[in-house]
Length: 171
Image (tube, rainbow, N blue to C red; front, side):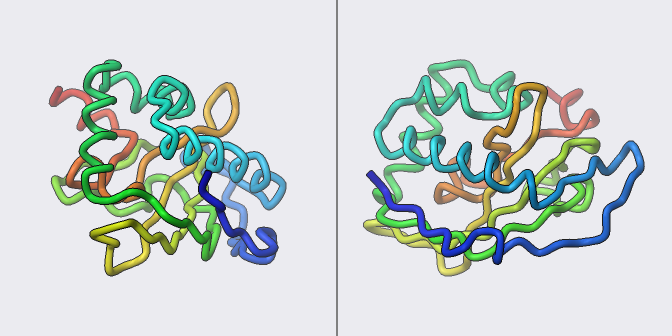
């Protein structure tokens, strides 16, 4: 079991002024505990090789593109880069999904998704990233889900994300 260090998580929350238009759903400090719990459960499923549980805790807009076999290959590829030894959540930041940078391949996040960005200091048994990793926690109809990021150790070779409508049409 991996210990996720959160050190007074609400103290790590960086608030930004609420934007109340349809493209930027409001995320508040009250959302942090539920998103944190979902992140911890997802990470535990990752470390225990419970692919089905992990996939079920991933945002439905990502799962749609990964059948069970492809998901398992994706996670196994990430684990070849080293076993996850520790995760320290450095900051939790609410952000409009449209403001998250696009991936290395030019895919961009879907607008209108309420998200919290978790900045992470991670350690792996080998190939620990030189820069902090991040995880996106996305609120969907049934609560908070893992919504991509560079954690764990760039599983796709690039950032995993909830694709926008333009990117979805490419596939």
